[in-house]
Length: 402
Image (cartoon, rainbow, N blue to C red; front, side):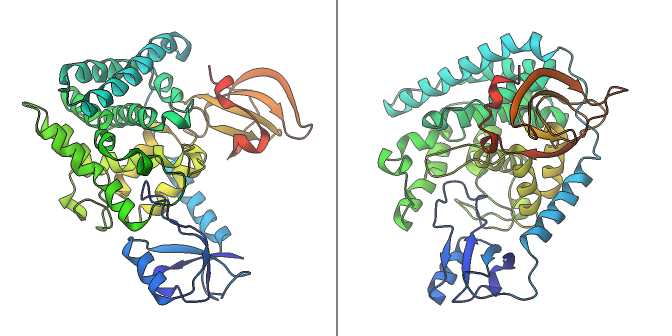
């Protein structure tokens, strides 16, 4: 049986089934195994881990600890509570109409991030205006229909993770800023910081940056230095916005002080650093990487809610859920009818009633005629049961979202 226990209850002889530490991006520490010494426990504590999941069939039990099912039910209850938040509003353009511009902007942003990585490697100056122009274009698209750019984030090449992640963060930070009704200039600066948040990684040796196995402690310290490297690169540019630098410098800080590089706590982390932490963790845990299997958007939202108890800003997590929905565009959902559908558009009044494109029937295990269902329309009887993992059915969601 899988149970969750506080880190202080971890004992020699227990078997960890999940370190529950994906809120530390790049922490590809060993996530499973039997605890053989107190030294190992202290090492796990030093990471800032607050809770771990243990397998009582493979190691010692913790009799009064809640089971995985208990925790999942609690997270589901939190998700349902979050679903009562009003959605971000009705798009001004249809997704089909906005998709052409969104694709062009997405490709432009990927190309710009790739170019600047090469520029930094060669010691060339970063042209801030180009990033501001791309950020402004992204924000314009998001105000027309945020789902168009957002859904492109699910079409990833794990070999291009660094560029894809940077652009996705720029998109998500802009969507977040729109939902928070931030000033337009502030939104642009936050988006620029998000686009460049990992710029320091270009100075990390490739054998560490792309290592498929676990990083040793020395390698992890080098990996963490990308934050200060990025901050220093941007601080050396005359007139570079301080808000953008703040996003770069603080996106790995955590409320309980378990983050890096400074171990800042609570209000010592800026509002924009806390925003960046939420979107960075969300995008990282939904992506497939060489050492990490991505999870579904809805599962990721549940983890954000769980980790907001210690590491992430609870209020901002709820705001983020409000702006992307409990079933973000690109999610695969199981319907009461047994059909599977890709979420293609949020509902302006109720997060639980998006538009979905159904394409598969789980009962007959076969593809069916593709059909769009607006779950909010009168007469539509089908409803979402839960989000599911496309890998379970071998479905490529990107083929059905637009």
